[in-house]
Image (cartoon, rainbow, N blue to C red; front, side, top):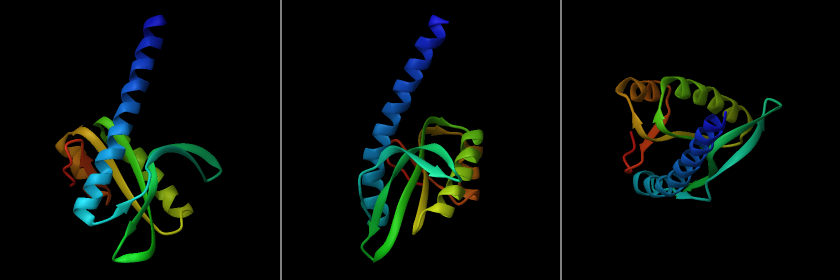
Length: 136
């Protein structure tokens, strides 16, 4: 039981570290690739469909070309992104689109994703940003 608690604590720490890195890298990538000004990104809790749920990466962005259009970054941050996590995130994005006013920009951030995971991300219309700054 003690080992289980220790492993769980380490998992939470690594997950938090990945999210912290995601906030920094996403700012850089979205500015470089899309020209967006990204506001503060953070882990947050949102109430969608009367259910409180955690969002790993959440915050506003502004496109200078469309200054009156609200843009919301909704993201998932994982070390090794899996198909199951992508499917769960896609459902979360749908709920976000039903409750947020403006454009929802869904993005997965990870260190690693197998080719079939990358294909599924693209097929679902999500974006993928790797820890080293590549967006696909």
